[in-house]
Length: 130
Image (cartoon, rainbow, N blue to C red; front, side):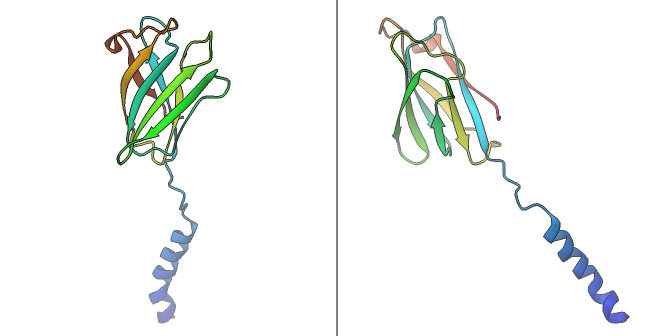
């Protein structure tokens, strides 16, 4: 009996550990939005932070181009199809941990007439996580 009493707490801890969930994953995605005086036709922005993918949300008439920079930096260009404009949400950014959000920097905006409006009149932000 003494032997059982000695090993019972260890067995209980092992049982609890075996039953606990090992999927404490915080992976997920966030969406990027843009605000400005008019809906643009194209934008270029920089993402700094660990991400696993940048994709166009389902049903959006966009093309996306990416350029890997140093470290965890990614430059992204989103271009709407001819006759279309970019609307919210612009892109989905997949993250290994949604508790650590990337930093976004808007680099350039192109209007529907291909003019280049002042970047300062637009802002981008993150919505999410999903």
